[in-house]
Image (cartoon, rainbow over all chains, first blue to last red; front, side):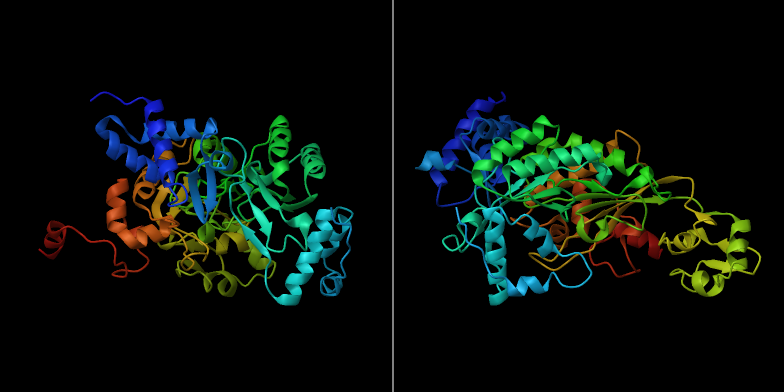
Length: 79
Length: 397
């Protein structure tokens, strides 16, 4: 099984965060589990960690704190 | 910007008496509108017996998920200058050693951008800056990093590790707490700044069982210095304590929790196999008794304060671990715990609560540790560990 590109996982994560925005808070592990389920064996925790970092460092997603830490869209993306 | 000054009769009471007063400290900064409003909202809280703060939200610096705790007043119209009053956690140096110049740098940064109020230190161990606006967050971070500082942890991440003063100024350090804390902090920068866990994870390094960082009560992983061999006894010094008036029988022998010390008026004997390393005798006779020579740390897991569930004290997982750089065994254990708890922990479930839910036996199996007697407080008291049938059959045969 070939390894999935980090950018591809990041894109899929972003789509998931966007589609659940305002409905469900997602933790990094929620995203990781969803991506491993979506992409199968080629995707692992390490790739997901890098993908999350790419989303956060690019500013496409941010961390929020609502009792625990979640990944969400920045206010500008939802305005 | 509010110029209003508030009458604070209830707070004024807290300035009375000979002891230091946090109200007096806050009032010294009250030329700032933010601090005046802080006094106003605090007086209100004392009148109404209710806090007027809420926390959380979206505040932080670019790329980090921890280090800034959003804090807001729920009375923003009455107290506009504390409508945002965010807390910054700044990663403290190991053992809280500073030069006066470093403290001046920190104070200058906070005078420039925030309320000027600090908390040295927060219960996590970080340097805490109290009260900044959202617009100040990135400028504070830029100035801190320019001077070599970084933010600490907050939220569901590895919280800033902290340690006691260790070998830098304590004779009881059984390992180099400062080095271990520094190395682990450096190794896990990603886990410190990017929350990825079910909830917080705290590491505290104590050099001996006196546990000056209270790790046994607060850390998800307590790394507590200990020794394997015999307590070192200087019999001459023991006799000198007796000659100076110490009642060794009453003050040492009778107070030993494991009843493992004897004293015949000339020599002290310790049955080290029974010793639980409580430090009582060593603390009372520091010139006569010292920890053994084969030193390391015991690793305990699962303490927490009572925020979600009740309070837990940590329990022994690894009775003895050599603590030498690069701390590979410790790191392997930390990563195994994070991997299992990270994947299966519920939201806001600390590692101690997780162990209670899944069972210690399963937890040990998953992180690759064998059960040992030190994990059990009393025989037949632990409901979590089950022995394989063949072991039970072998014991009965």
